[in-house]
Length: 328
Image (cartoon, rainbow, N blue to C red; front, side, top):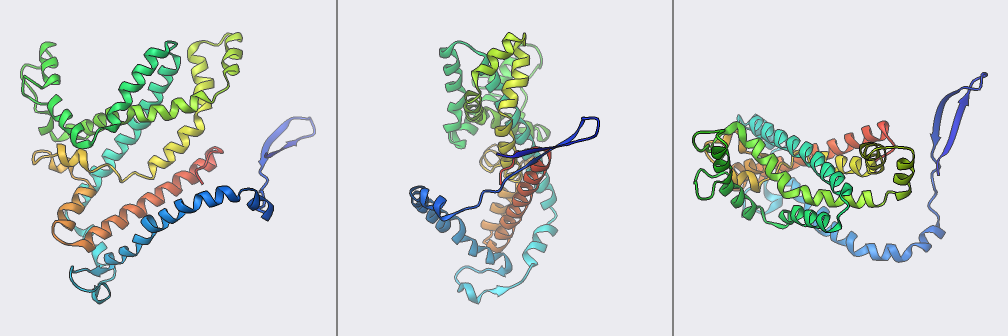
């Protein structure tokens, strides 16, 4: 546990409180006491080494003019030419804008909506109703994006037989004729954000409900005795109790700031919205893999990884300075 040191002036007033953390030294005794856990972790370390770190040597292609069929070490080395080509491509800035914009929308909605749903479900006393809502909300998570985008396209369709949204808006007299939602460029980001929330909100809610279940019920009883209302208990006990979980998940999600997705943009996108639907992953597919320019595709992958690692470390550093919660 951390020691707490207080600086007190002559009048007895506390000037500041400092937390001094004790660093635990790793000893052979500690290692021996946990040797079973270490042996159990070996298969996972081997798996990570083989499938996560070993393929990194392929990043060398980003510094070559890679040609399939030619021995890897006989390729032409071009230095940073592939990165210059990537950043000088006239449509790359637009692709980067789309990726960052959709990632930020997914980040904000993906953090706020599960927290709100978890707080609401926690306040429900009926176990049956709570479990029913939980089940309905997290089932879309297990759907493939191919199936999910098919459902979304049908719901937003202009066909009166299947276009639920258009039918509802027309019956409420908000619109006079069906709207081609997937043909309006400026609506595409919002459609992606809402669709992602619909698919993933239940899964995120489970994580927060699990964190809420670890809060001591005695805190709620004490707050109720002191006259705290439902929203006061929610604000000062529930949200405070899951703050660590929120921060850790936020840091991890910031690390995926350039992972806006591929399937949903690829399947819902079309020529009418291409200026708003293309992400870095689609760019890599179109101008890298499909044109056998594997070096350019690898350079784009390295760029994404570098940005993700930088954002992850930056978010972790800021979190450590602002609060005591850190990922590493």
